[in-house]
Image: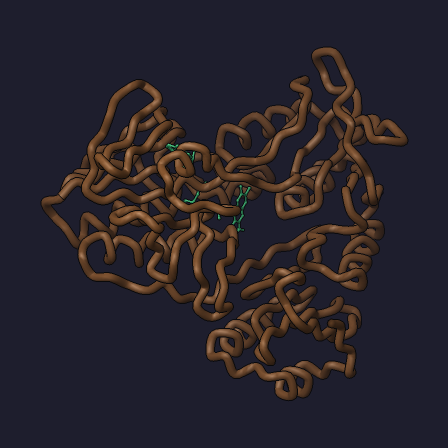
Length: 401
Ligand SMILES: Cc1cc2nc3c(=O)[nH]c(=O)nc-3n(C[C@H](O)[C@H](O)[C@H](O)COP(=O)(O)OP(=O)(O)OC[C@H]3O[C@@H](n4cnc5c(N)ncnc54)[C@H](O)[C@@H]3O)c2cc1C
């Protein structure tokens, strides 16, 4: 049996590792665009803050692949796939036949026009090395800016403030995570950031970067923000071109069912690239998350080895932004909820409870990380009906359609 895995991140590498446990003779080929052995993206911000040494971010040694008899092709990418004749084509021109194919190609940051020194993205270890160098060159008091309002934008704020760089953030909407936070939660977060000394510019349009070779500023529609380091955190996108060309169904990501199967036989997808059918949410969702990518890698390996297995786990994500904890649990897309219950903010900040068909399907919690476990349980067991949630969370009758 010949297994080909596209993407050497946590989802693909976990799948390869599990496959080797389940099939000691099969040929496993792991194709990785990056040069590094598996490392933790989660630890990159810690490495950048100087809390973790660079070598500690690696989760596998180079020798591991050979020890496990996994053929690791690094520094090449899959550019084409022929699902009828079952082979993939690599960027170096080689063609690799497969019996079973796994797509675990993750995603990449969205980029802006303008390539001057001082502009930073944060997805890979190479990005982190570059950012570390930029930060080392800056001194306390140098102006910094961030464009965007999601997870990576938060990481930039944490980093820039820790380096004592006065920071301005420009947001396209009124607040962070416009798809997941309502106005009250968004304003609570904005106010928290202002109190930490961050300047927030809302409803902005980004026109480009200023500077010849070195960054001098960020051009917005009505103003220029002077900065000599700029973090771009405007979300991610997957390279779906070659996948779509192979007639594998894609939408926002590669569409898979609860068994992580695509519409094409013997082709699966997992991790950040997968738009998977979440049996608890009862719809397809995308949720970029380390733990989920790893669990999906484990589950899909079983299926690829012949034991068809369903993936079921309520995803959750917790992070800290300048001292405020924010936790996302389950299906947190406001537009997909038919009711949003709001527990008013106290010193902790508001909690949003997303309901669909009279069941709790997701929650966004500010300042109360300890709610993560009980919320996950209620969503998972589908026991959160309206009355229970209102009573349990002390919701004061505030129901937004
Ligand atoms: C800075 C940062 C901090 C984060 N912090 C957290 C956190 O605290 N908690 C959390 O849960 N999650 C966090 N995440 C998200 C988490 O890291 C991702 O959800 C997870 O890494 C997804 O794993 P993956 O294997 O699906 O994709 P990836 O890790 O993106 O791996 C996919 C790999 O496939 C390669 N590839 C792409 N296309 C091809 C191709 N055509 N051919 C060959 N190879 C290809 C890519 O180069 C990449 O190496 C963080 C992410 C970042 C960037």
